[in-house]
Image 1 (cartoon, helix red, strand yellow):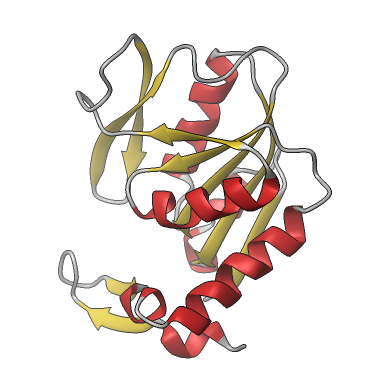
Image 2: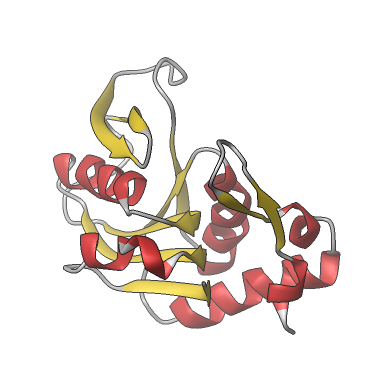
Length: 170
């Protein structure tokens, strides 16, 4: 299925000059959503993933069914103050500012094989932050997965030491 036809362009969101790639039409179509999950599962079916790390919040949408299909646990990466137990955190740069992400300190055990998932790869900042959190816990990041990659923002280069897989590239 051509899932690209379910991605809507929204100009000047969240700020002027940004062309936002909106996944809500894809999420609203059961066949397109299933096709997206199936494509991610097919790519990682033989990778022996222990945990899927999903980045808040749209990463949760794709990470949860992917983790279930792979027989892996799900680890949520959250914005500050959202996790109830001891956590590790990292600050990172965005296209227009900085942000912080957190993960429970005991979510990943040393040597566990981890797949990082989000809806979009732009500059790679949030994915690199998630990788840093996994590595702080001595997990092994074996790959990063995205529904959409904005190639002109060079996020793939920021993740050059890791396998990068995306379903759509703009």
